[in-house]
Amino acid sequence: MYFGIIVMALLAIFAVVLLYALHQAVSVLADPLRTLPFQSGWLPRQHALSRFHARWYPASIVFLAFDVEMLFMYPWAVVVADKGISAVVEMFLFLGALLVAVAWAWREGAFRWA
Image 1 (tube, rainbow, N blue to C red):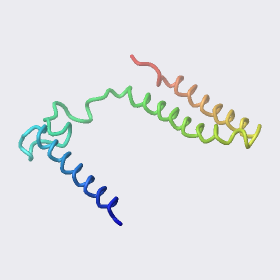
Image 2: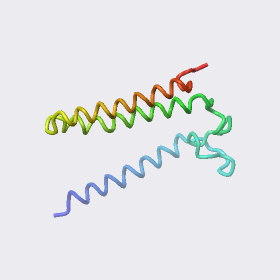
Image 3: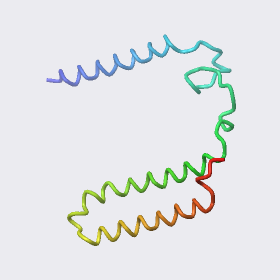
Image 4: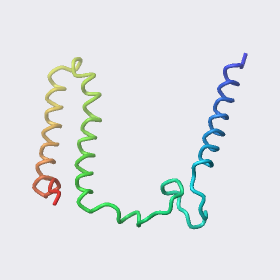
């Protein structure tokens, strides 16, 4: 009666034990007080906050803006046929606001890499 549940529970336990054993087999053995969880036990070569240049942060903000745009466009594409022309007008207003944001970022130099 509960055969499927028992099999799935045993498979889950087996997977956890297998992954734990795999981690123990391939991890770097180091002093646990000096080794951070960064990069699976390898000692870090530099400070975590000094790895990226400051010019990458505006670029990441612009990327997130376009990513959020796609987040809104997928559901819109599903319902645009049902809603009609008002949905198209609303999406073009949204894209216009994003275009204003891109123009502002361009003016502020977010797209200059040097």
